[in-house]
Length: 63
Image (cartoon, rainbow, N blue to C red; front, side, top):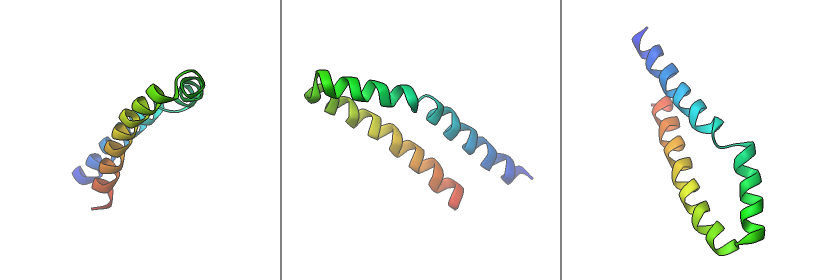
């Protein structure tokens, strides 16, 4: 049972991260690239870093 709890906690973390990152993220991304593509690209790099954290959590689920 404890290992199931571990998985559920990881899934909850993923859900929290993703909930912050969806519709508003896309709207800001569009606006940023319209107004300042160079700096938007820098921000995109930071977002990609957080997406990699999500991937690492998903890897834990598959082990």
